Every structure is written in structure tokens, then in C-alpha cells.
Length: 186
Image (cartoon, rainbow, N blue to C red; front, side, top):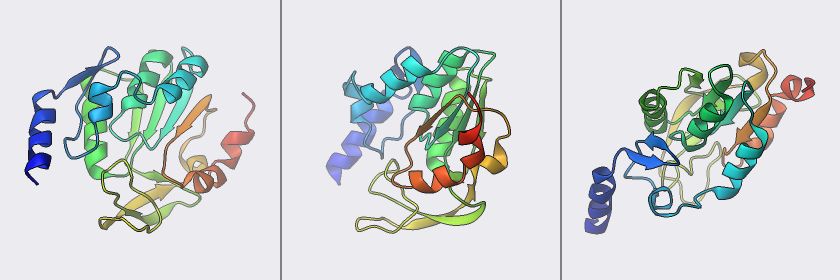
């Protein structure tokens, strides 16, 4: 318990942090040492984004968490592009919103919703930290909360050029809910 408190204090000293030229507030209760100490944090995902997201693109970030990749994509698409960021967890969403505002990105549209194969209400099961929340019960869950869920086809009408998904095993459900988007010519 004391170690956790010390870690939270340590992280809070550095909030906001600078990551790849962007400022971010991070949750001291999450496992954020990777972001703080490892310059190659989620390097492969960042490389895929860097290679595929272009100026003027319209992109979606499903499971945006606190905005690490959302901010990267917002920078890449520029003022004429758009990033739709989806994050159902209220704590993560508050950080995401704060981070988008902190960096002055007017090209990000935020949704406090989970992406799935249906639109309605659903349950999110909490993980040991807020980056491990899931739409299904699992062994080490730490409670649950209800959220709004949406089919991407129901909320986005324009062509989407790139989709990043990190939604802890619900990717198949999300894909079923975006059949029209996936069939759109790119």
C-alpha cells in the first residue's frame, strides 16, 4: 500500500508529462511507468499509425484511454482531418478530454461510449488498472459499471480512413458494428 502511494505521488509530480512533443496528464493509479520511462512504449502501434495516417484523414480511435494515440493521430491528420475518439471509462474519458484540450486539438471529436455490435447499454468489467477494462467478466476483475455502447455504423456517416482498436477482446463485436464503414471504398 505504501509503495502504491509512493508511486502515485511520483507520477503526480510529473503531471502533465511530455510524450513525443505532446503534453499528457496520466492516471497515477494506472500502469503508466511505460509511458514515463520507456521511449519505445507501444512503438509498433505508433509506427503503424505514423505510416498509415495522413494529413486530412478521418480516423477513429476505439479504446482511446487517456489519449496517447489519439493525440498522435490528431497531430498527423492536421486541421483538415478528424479523429473520432471513443472511451467508455469515465476516469479515462476525463483524462482524454483534458489531454485533447491541453494540446489544443480542435480536430478531435470525443465519445464517452464503448464500441460494439449493438447500440444501447452494456457493462464494462474493471481490470486491475483502467487500461484493462473489458466487456466480459474475467478472473481478476475489480468491479463493473454500466456504459453506453454504440455501433460505429450508427454514429459515423463519413468514410473512415484508419481505425485503431485496443478494446481488450471486444474487437470482434466492434467489427460487426462497422460493416458499412468497412465496405466503404477508401
